[in-house]
Image 1: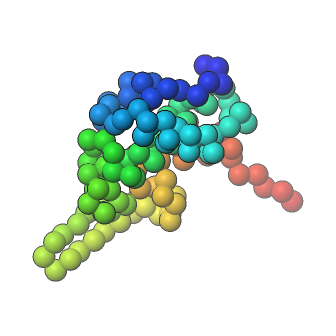
Image 2: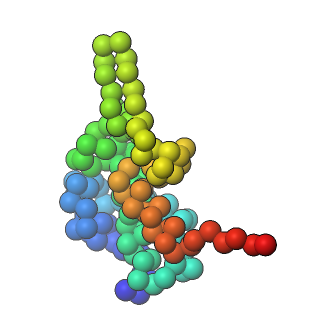
Length: 127
């Protein structure tokens, strides 16, 4: 895959839960993703990373039909369980393990993006 920014149609085809989102909204999310993904990424991961990050942003903003988008619209992003009577909220063990306070841990798209980051840019130990 060449270093080309995917179009809104590419995101809709890859992630059907976001198919109903307006192209202009998707274009803004893809522009935001370009702030996180540049040509330092391997060419084969460039477009997938842009799509994942844009899908993550859209989901956090409450766009789409998935459960995570519904939770974001309700203001409950990042929680794995909730209870209404005698309020009981739980972020679950995966929150800290998947990136802690990072908003990337709040969606499946973000966790997959974070996995790509870790694979392509491993931490370096200097002694």
